[in-house]
Image 1 (cartoon, rainbow, N blue to C red):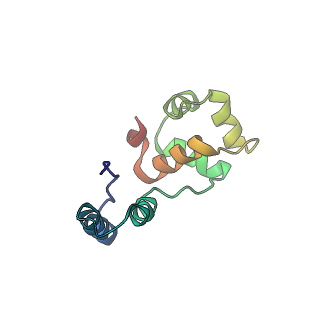
Image 2: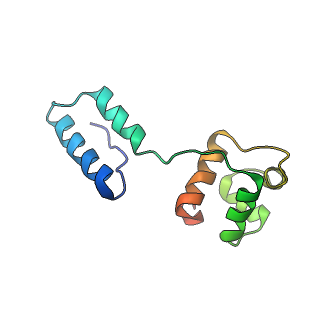
Length: 107
């Protein structure tokens, strides 16, 4: 069995651990485990320009430094904060991770 992302804390972590044990015993199939994996992912929600700026300011970094962490160009962060463009794909996922866990989570 491949290593799976573990859910963090609480009931979901307990249920996931139990399901993983049942999977190893052959009592839970791969499709069911995939459903549990999806439940353990960090949700990806759209962020407004104000939320992106507040997030960057909360982390106390400049636009160029924030861009470096996200592996995007500085002008991308600037455009997101002005509402000229909206982050999507991997950038939006990283922003949501930073929102949930802080900048160190992606460092």
